[in-house]
Image 1 (tube, rainbow, N blue to C red):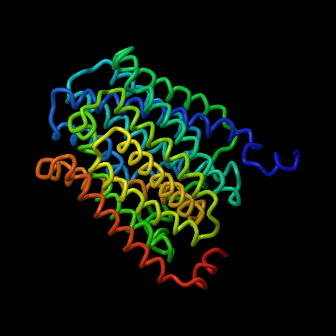
Image 2 (cartoon, helix red, strand yellow; image 1 turned 90 degrees about the vertical axis):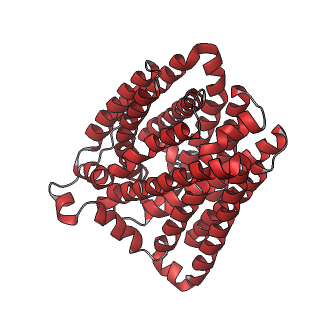
Image 3 (cartoon, one colour; image 1 turned 90 degrees about the horizontal axis):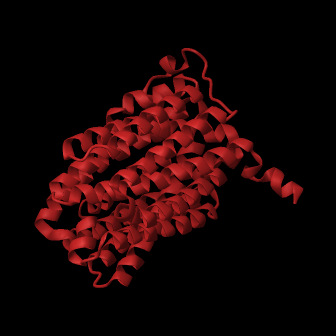
Length: 403
């Protein structure tokens, strides 16, 4: 038993602080998303929902040239504390505004902090657990986040009806305060050498690292293509559930909880896949699962069918997130890891913006059900294309990449 504990990632004190705290923050974010989607959808059309989702995406894109340089160029504790303070302030502000304009502005401020905090935590965790345990830590973190999202989504709709939107949003703000405390308590820190970031470039360093890897240069563009067709359904999801199926806020939250439950299973399954080829196939399988599930949700005639589709979407998302995160982190040099993660996050958000625009147009032309079916089919096609490209990478090349 002692040997097992010594080889477990939980033997690290900082892991016991960071992973649960980050999961708690995601629970708060799930609550906030439910609240804000319901607030904007009530009395507004698809254009307003599109604007809200754009507010979540645009700041990350705008921060591409700066976020990675901040993460790699400054002490991790300083970066995490100040980004957490910014997010907490925005979260409190969201609890006390009601109009669409101020809501969108504060969401943008919230995401500016997240654009820096995400890569900062992502680059710090390998320092805590060691390079050999990055995959295990990533899978564990994704599973915990899945549990957190399940919990947050399950109570999000209930909180709106019980404590109102303000109380639910204050819960989200409180989770950022917890992260600030944890950032102060964590002993492991990244302290880059002065001038290292300037010598190696900004966002270009992250993109060069991605496209310099034979496997990532296939999976990352495939991921971008998947995001375009897969996330377009986010614009019409609330209308599919509340209008087409006639379900209330509580059951809308329950569908989100089902997605979180699926994400736990998907992360666990991907964590059991070994080697680069196994992780790559996990990403491709996750993409295909999301596409097929979107079709199922689009034709759903009952709450049960909807829940099955939502669970499968979560499972696919868990596999995609765990597999791609693990591959990107383990294949990047530590000194530029923050810029690699920031470049990936920023470019994914860029394609999310395109997806939202397509989703808004598709929602107006095809309706919620037509949008889900069309995007689901396109997702399956994207997964098939990624499959063909991964097959072209020979086993010998993958073995060389592993070493």
